[in-house]
Length: 390
Image 1 (cartoon, rainbow, N blue to C red):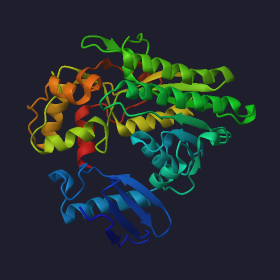
Image 2: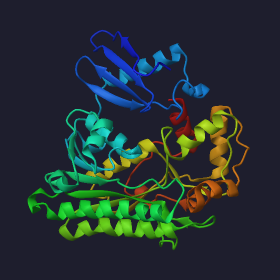
Image 3: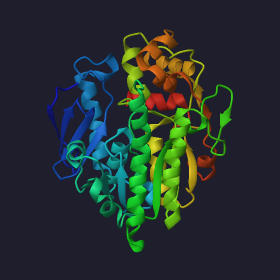
């Protein structure tokens, strides 16, 4: 992997722009800028420790680096189209735009020529993380102006939960979600009637259903009675307030998002690479997973398709148990997957927060498939190969 800031100048094929490729391990992104003025930021999986000490698959040889660079150049030259929009340009306001999913949504919308407005608590920080041309940034006091005239709003804000829970953090987990959603809806309701966005796409989570090793949940299943279920109920209720002013609300209950640059998979990859991979806890807990690209595509579909009204599970149609996920990942990486991480170790590390990885639920995307969404990655093996090898 090239060093931080190292630049490659690639001679393009006849008639195509030359591209400068700047590798930046800190953001785990490959920044590509063409001489024609087009630019993109494409995530390339690396170790959290950086390219100099990354595991073998993420320390490609010079030839491998150049092959990836050439592949990116081909993608740069091709027009980017969000097929769901049928070529029509949108203005989309987004909260949580610098997060794992928000940043990818911003990238796809911006690359396709849509106008993106970033609603953020800290505009200066957001500007430093998102550098696409034409982005607009709005601080908390400006959110009403940020949603006025927008085609739709995507609400992804929320404190990370995969850490040790304290009483203070638990309050923050809930307030960051409910508070941001309430602020977004208040901004929408305060906007002039003729300038209100038509749709609010708001995040939730499969934690809504509670925990079970035997039950199967769909969008029509009742809520659970644990802490995360309580958070999700309040989160969704805050979003549904927008319906009172005629705004269509689509709530996406996210499962475990698979992405090498973050989330569960991002934490598992380095462990597997040092031959220490294996299931967390018993391995029998359900993993209702989804590929990061399907999540982004679902959000765009929900923006443009009026059939997306109400609640939809953002999970692949083939959930697996933790032990199967580890086995498939180990086979793809050529690493063992037999070394479990015991419950007590995770409880010591994460406290009550260990429930996020030690317990799960089998969730099916019944309504999501009923409205016609076709998953790019319905099979776990295909999803992991794409994420690990590309």
